[in-house]
Image (cartoon, rainbow, N blue to C red; front, side):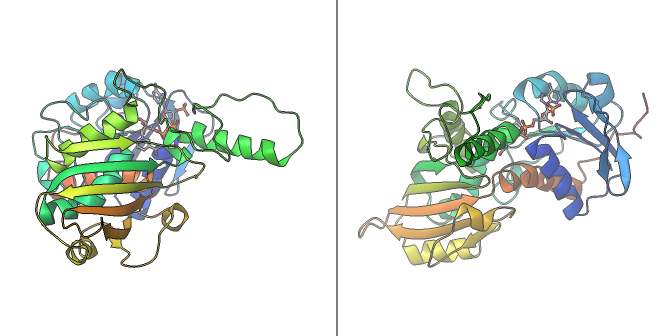
Length: 343
Ligand SMILES: NC(=O)c1ccc[n+]([C@@H]2O[C@H](COP(=O)([O-])OP(=O)(O)OC[C@H]3O[C@@H](n4cnc5c(N)ncnc54)[C@H](OP(=O)(O)O)[C@@H]3O)[C@@H](O)[C@H]2O)c1
């Protein structure tokens, strides 16, 4: 298969490459793209691949699949052209997620939404994916009337800049070196702090962009357009893996035992009937962990749970590669593609 990655030098792009290798995806030609050319090539499976600036021409050279892990702007500018050239586009940006008729596939939750006539597959918001994998088994068991979630989001959710900002602040706190300023993606210092704003803006209703994505994309993935969802998204000084404190109201009566049994057999989920799980436990994993499931008092419809998942892997790169595997298994990849042509 001929595969390209736009954003191959970023946190998600590097992880897509790792996951392709781990899952033994056949790669005949690799297109490695970033915002600009690099002098040093990328080493993958014994070969060196040049890293080039992403351009419409360079991306329309017969790739079977193109992963976007760059920015909303780059996807808006380049993705549709890739799809027209015959590639399946798997896009980690927010650009196409809520477009009508565009599926938002999490293979453990809604694989049936993939269809032969779609060429662009957005990967949902990382917080929403982790949430959906954890609550979809409850939706299937007893329906969902409402979901409330408070998140504890890792700095890597803001890409390399997020990891660098935390490292820089940590180092500054541990040395007496004079502080220099550094551009940070966060609205406040992140070291020894929590920041109740993920993203940079709050709308007229008081919601951040991340909070709106979590609500709208969760409804779409679960196929529950009128589900009530309220989210407060918070950045914490954790490197990898998002945690979520979730409060659900079900449509029908159920019990903690029934929910636990559903979670224990749910695809992509590790259920902890006892004890706790933390982001450090799940860093580098593809499974979403659910713990501390409990009823609110003697309620049969109100439950609380704690969900943790590595958002760079299951929330982005692994979900993207799983979409490719799903499409390959269904024979949707490859039609119309040719060998990658050289410039
Ligand atoms: N980090 C997460 O947990 C996460 C989770 C889900 C979704 N996402 C989404 O995944 C995408 C990548 O995020 P990230 O965290 O990996 O960011 P990142 O670490 O900042 O990396 C961004 C990558 O995109 C490239 N890039 C930027 N502008 C470009 C352009 N105009 N054309 C081509 N390439 C361009 C960068 O190349 P240079 O190195 O040349 O600048 C770099 O390779 C974003 O859309 C983000 O919202 C991220």
